[in-house]
Image 1: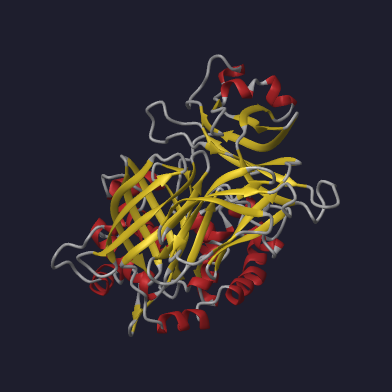
Image 2: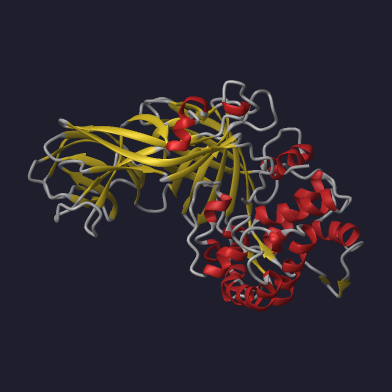
Length: 527
């Protein structure tokens, strides 16, 4: 049974993690009672310590562990008991905020992130079958890291014979080199965790301004209202906002906070099921919001609590061309101070203003200084790019994976979502040098082309799916054999996503490598 099927069997709603926020039934057993009665039947207990629980993980990491106990080892846990145990373990044996830095993309479902590992051996030994982030979001003592090595060979016996394993003494390297490295780099005992546990968590109850950008849809902003739920760490959530084109972004839902700061919310926004994965930091929050059934469809989200000082979350759009006038929306909280524009920019009209949003018409002189400048409201600031021309365009992400699917099957297609990012060559006038700088996302016309001659011969651009010319959203084709293709193969493809931007009389293009591959049958909470 794959992860999607497993989680859907635990809750008919079908959202990968939404069921974790369900309120416990009255009189339900506590987590410790469940562990003592149902976990120690296999795990020994010495004093208050349960063997093999000397680990710390993210909420998603504990969900994977507890679900594996239930599905593969027949642990007699009901869905409600799984929720209770995961919440307890994430709260008492979780990660400090600083311990998640660099790996949060995995929890936020940023699945096209390309990891860069400082330790080359870590990448070869630990991050060739799953993300390195899955390891980086764990903390274990030496003995538990050693147990994990043996677990891999017991659960996946071909590990040491797969690519990257059979050319070396995999087990010897894993035990003698990787275990000490992991125990030192990701230790069970840490000052960061001890310091975090000593802090009193800050309640998220209140009114928040939110802002973000969603590839394929654009900028958005609004107000998020958080109220206490019927149980600790559970909240009701309302969101009332708009997209840059004025269309509404409105709805409500529920949230659950783990470890004092890990915010997980599920919302219905205009009939679309959404999920938020955020890190709370007092009066600030940041992370990602995405569609629950199409996690490639999502974008950054940042938030500031209203009434807690002046904060500029975003300037939308965060760019202006010299010699032109633009309407800028400044989003934040406590925006009652004076507006200070970069040199060469002039405020021509205040369209609207309140404590959370300013809509301004701004004129940029042709002589305005070029580069990423600073716009201020009171003591708060945010970057604003001032440019006179676009020199070249890059596609973001530079490398992405989409997946065929649908056709009534259990796995939906995984879309590709792209943006065109304008760049300047800087003062030296040379592309690819240190003084190049990113102007920001700009409108483009989109298409796809074969990545190489083999893809051209196989007509991948014809069969792999459709690119929306205006939004940069690629929807892969259906799964299964295609009799129109050579040897009736499926609709996988090796493509370039091509952005075309008109700049005066010139046409600029950028390309991103895009693989359309087969279904993702196993889709765990952490990739």
